[in-house]
Image (cartoon, rainbow, N blue to C red; front, side):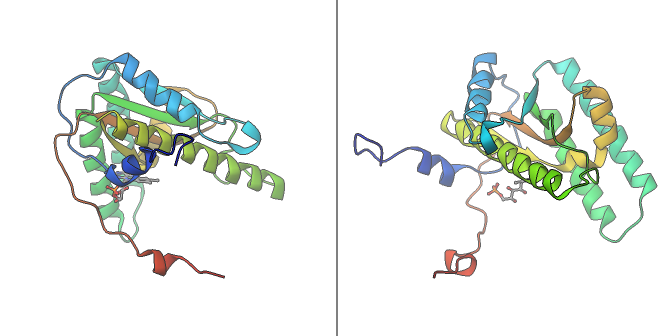
Length: 205
Ligand SMILES: Cc1cc2nc3c(=O)[nH]c(=O)nc-3n(C[C@H](O)[C@H](O)[C@H](O)COP(=O)(O)O)c2cc1C
């Protein structure tokens, strides 16, 4: 409840949000994207460090260039690796890429101070990375909930890791690339995807 005793709409957005994998071609305004990024920036963060940076790709040509880089990366990953489940993972990544190509906005999320995977040396550095990653995750979730509230569809994406080198070389940002978020008007509707029950994931003491 808020201070006026009204039920907060955030709960509604939490339960209404779905991962959207089909977007209408309609454009999204710069103002709408600013609202999403402001929501992301309102997230809590460890010691208020705000360890995030957003690269919002709205220009069509730029979108093609970034996603061409991602495509190259996925193909390289496919050629250079051989492990069980690889083909399933790669086909998932190609599917995600095709979704991103149809999204009018793709926001890449970076953590400028986060060490690259395997670079944390001390216990403190590992903890620092862990809390930064949690803070950035909170900012992404804020963005998704704000999009839901605005009637926009969204998709949280980590298949970008298959093209980590190519994307980071192209986007040229400090720190670690954490995720991407596709935003647009949803061109599909989906029911709630299955969740574990509260009983299954909760231990009461
Ligand atoms: C960290 C993270 C990474 C994800 N990466 C991808 C992705 O690369 N491609 C994709 O299609 N969905 C991705 N998703 C979306 C999940 O598949 C989705 O949240 C899950 O299946 C539950 O569906 P729902 O979001 O509609 O409730 C990701 C979600 C999270 C939280």
